[in-house]
Image (cartoon, rainbow, N blue to C red; front, side, top):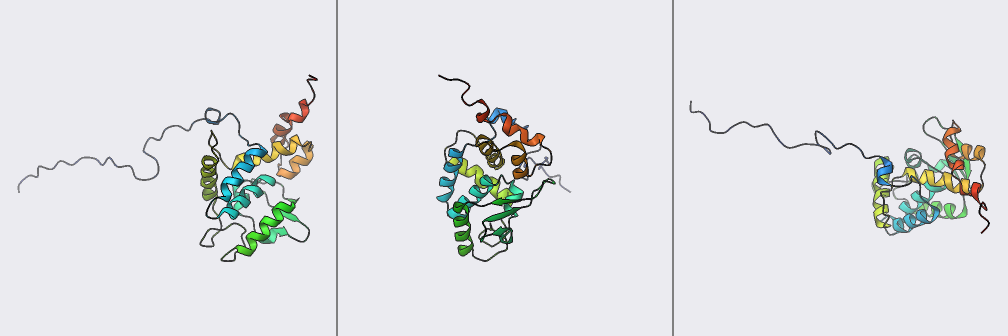
Length: 210
């Protein structure tokens, strides 16, 4: 039998999303100076989201996640039966063994949610759904927020947990006490809440009189 002149070589193609030796993850401090957004920056995200194909849904997701300090998993798991439209209340079930709570809903949120409920097609027990009617996934929302950060022309990458931190700092700057903030964000351990009040700008207000 004649010997083949073809030589067997190991494959060089890497299948999957990462290579065999992915680069180490960069520290957050190397990517951005802070891990929260300001109220004005949140509004920029909402404006950018409203320009999307499903602009109202996307903008409402950003608004609800920010106003109620929701984690990604908590946001995508929201159901219509958690909302009391007649009294303007939202029942929040927290992840990571957090304490559940009932939050008031502002008029802006109620109007956005009512419109979303009217326009939802197909009808679903979940508030935020994809085109196929399936619940929005955590991965999908992370990618959405990252794209919105680029569309809003932020100079640093944006991730969904920055919305939760933005809520904590905004409430602390408005003078909400630590215990109330702990209950609102569903923290079991108050040490996770202290970070917001320790860095609150209201603590240092009027230090300089000039």
